[in-house]
Amino acid sequence: METARDIVSISQLITDLNLKIIYMPEDKEYFVESEDVNRTGLPLAGYFTYFPYERIQIIGKTEYTYFKNIDKTEREEILDKFFSYEIPVLIVTRELDVDEDIIEKAKKYKRVVLSSKSSTTRFINRLSNYLDAKLAPHVTMHGVLVDVYGIGVLIKGESSIGKSETALELIQKGHRLVADDAVEIRKVDENRLVGQAPELLRHYMEIRGIGIIDVRSLYGVGAIKNQKGIDLIIELESWNQKKYYDRLGLDREYEEILNHKVEKLVIPVKPGRNTSMIIEVAAMNYRQKGMGYDAAQEFTKKLSQVIDK
Image (cartoon, rainbow, N blue to C red; front, side, top):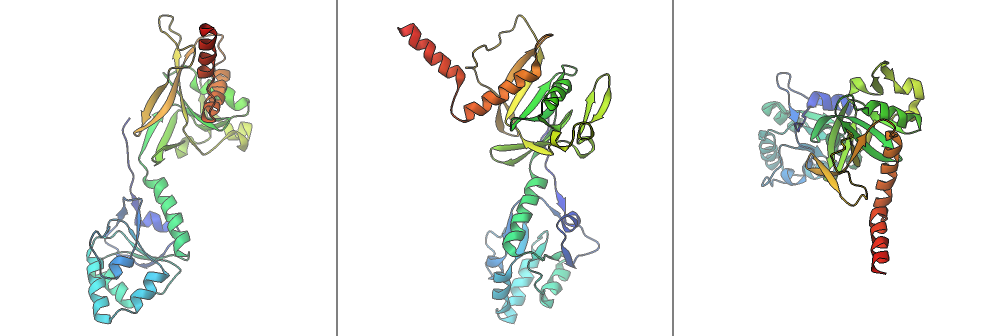
């Protein structure tokens, strides 16, 4: 399992966010690697110390109005220095008219200048969400991701253990499929992992003996979900009589994904066990713990009281 990190080309950014090209060099392509954006107030005032040039640069109405009133000679020096840095792109919001001297310096250093119709605040929010989704660290894991009572459950286990069949049972009970076989997991925040299916596999499941089925066509749109936060990992394994399995639920086990710990339960599988029902109970129990009630601790507390008496 290798952590990957994407980059976004400026051409892709233009298409996805419906941006207007003011100037774009034909012989050079730029890429964005940082999720952060930078408003150009300080550099346009001539302050370039700690200038985060690797970020997307935004000019809003405030910066634009201020810069228009700067002396022409000073303005030219600032623009020359600004565009000398290898910025990925400069985006002007509110469809403000871009002055000729800005375009001239952009051409000199072959920097991209774009325009957006949106207000600055709305555009930055939209851009930040877009970059978070595109550039977040991610991995692809083998497993099935389902939404059970609002809890994102990642079902793992060796091949042919019954992951997809268990997920299908959960779907028939009214729960929702997110991904089968391959789960793309992104770390969108310090404490939040989100999983989804690769585009090609979305809404499809492989059931041995039947083949590929389209869950959306068979069960309707209510049976699927495009993405879901990962709250709980269920590891299915063949029942081993020699192995000790936790019977009280006091032991907590975790698995680390993208440097984030996710609670993990190991569920032994054997004929006669209703695995889908056990996962339903596990999801409800996890949610109950999140609300402050832990049945295992409560039972242990009562047992200790009885022993003391």
